Amino acid sequence: MLAGDLTPVVTAALESQTGCSTATVQDPGNCTITPVINPFTGANYSNYTIPTAVNSVAAAVLVYYPLPNVQGPNYYPLPSVAGPGYNYQTLVPIPSNSDGADVRIDQVLTAKQQVYGRFSWKQVNLQEFNDDTVISPANFFLPNDTASEQNLSLLISYNYTFSPKLLNEFCFGLTHFNENETFPMEGATAISQLGLVLNNGINLAAHPTGQAFPTFNFSDGTIQGIGQGRVGTTISGNTQFTDNLTRIMGRHTLRFGVDVRRELYNAPMFYAPSDEYGDFTFNGSLTNYSFGDFYLGLPQTFFAITSPQINAYSWHWGIYGQDE
Image (tube, rainbow, N blue to C red; front, top):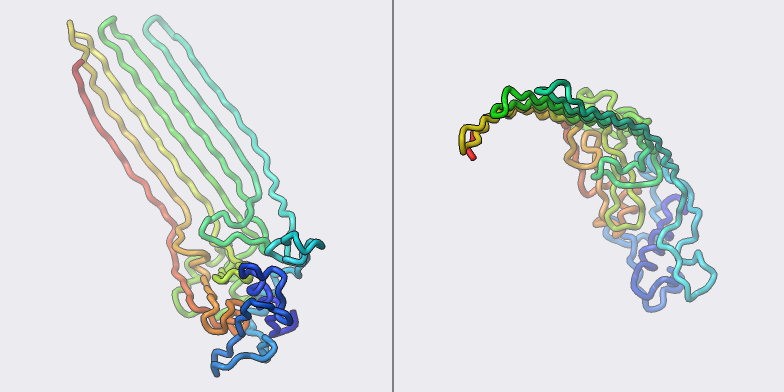
């Protein structure tokens, strides 16, 4: 595509219409061609070409887009066989490896004492296709995330029988999850390299080395979006202990106990894709094509907010008694 020439985009939109998979701008048949509008005059751009130079930020973003390697709907030689609705394909390696261990113990210590224990640990190292923050757009054009995940759980139970009618059981348990994600680009550096000037909602000092990439969404589907939300470390855990005393008195079985828990969650907070480094949406409302709006540097929406690191924890406790 020559600079400013939106013919491939217009063609892709044309071919997406029902029954128009083989239509072209030169021979649209009964299909409808949507013109490229000049948003400053309201007139149509001739030959589907925007004569002005591409916006400097758009030009910097397009550096991350590879050249097409699939011929779109005409990929297959037989006219009766529909081709793919895309013009680029690649294999994305996502290697991973994991290690784990499990330990258990069941031991009668004495006639009155028993101990039971379980411990599980797992370590996973992997690369993830870069839509890991879920709300970020999946795309082929940025490097993968690298993640290191660790899971562990522990349970210990100790029973002591004072007499045939008096028993105490103490339990301690914990679960812990830690995931450290990295992305090989810092959001502040990406903003500088793209030449973005953001003076609303952006506070780079809050996350000066946060790893991310501003998000550019194209809502009409004529071009793949690009972006990466801020990655970081996620920690969640639960620590719990209980103590239960059982007393048999005649026809009654009395139980009394206490349950104490501590919950922990620490993670990056997200509201929208790349929300700390800028989330831009182009919907084609100005030129009829989202790529045309992008070419001119005219997003329809922009969202940015500086999000804190979630650091939440709580204590829960309870006491109980019952008679059976």
